[in-house]
Image 1 (cartoon, rainbow, N blue to C red):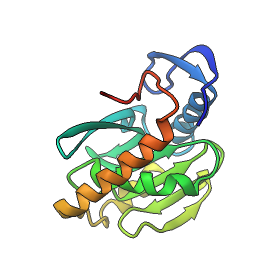
Image 2: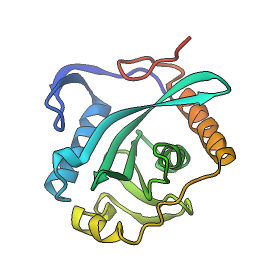
Image 3: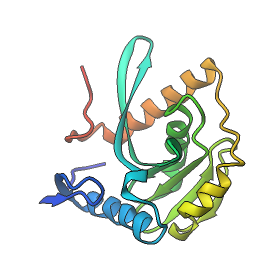
Image 4: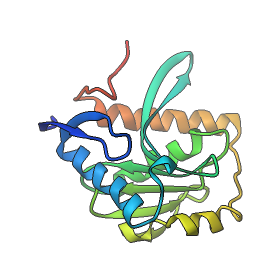
Length: 184
């Protein structure tokens, strides 16, 4: 994955806090701005860099969800950012959506900041492509009435945690930053 180019500091669009300015961060900020300005979400609907703790065989492992869209207090969309190919982000995005909450988060998005794929979390299938395919707030409000809000068995949850942990390890094995670092 290489090294991140640090460009200084910037203000996070959603939280207003000062964060490290990198090429990747600029793209994530653009996606957040797109959700608010074009898809009509409120900043309060979007959670930024949610850290989740995974317990795998008694060992604590942490993962970061780039963006989580919540409607009526429920996570409805997780967004996984990564440079390059979208297909390499699909499986970890599905794993995040399947373990983040006690229920399956219905939709997952993978994006490189310019392109995007919308995935149905239950089936794992790509259901639409392009940033414009991310449902706007009114569409999510309507769709949420039809979401199954299912859950996985404990065995399936453990498998998804392992998948997420493996992808995170591979993605971050060559870097350490403020938000992710291998714990001893």
